Image 1 (cartoon, rainbow, N blue to C red):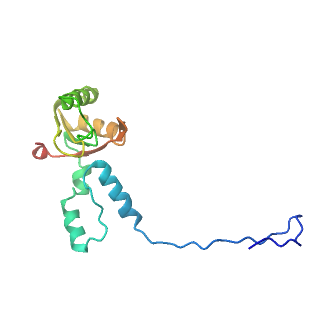
Image 2: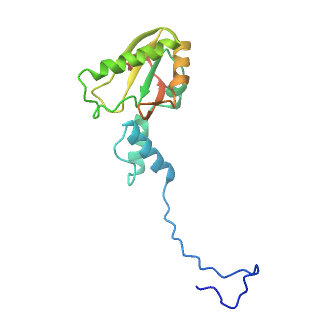
Length: 161
């Protein structure tokens, strides 16, 4: 629609054409979750088109909220590395040394396991006690390392390989 040429430019409103906008409904939470899972290496495919029973089965494999927040003396750091992009021989030893050095600032670090053959950039760290693990988890959660954002959860000793 073109403005009316007879309208004066002294503050009168000019008619404006507004294009029609089509809205496509999407489940933003599913898209965001799929992107996060892909970034963390926990799932390569989103839940689009899955039946409710498939989604429930997938959710059953995920850790419970209690498992994520109940402190233990062991933590699992996600997204520390991308195994497919690491090329140097023994790169996982360098990761282990860096994690050990950083984690000793929070207390006695008893064991560090780098899951270098699995996706997700996972590193397990065991501390002498729960308080040390809490300090490390708080400091590392959401922190950026080598252009990747870290996620930390508490784990049971039996879950460490």
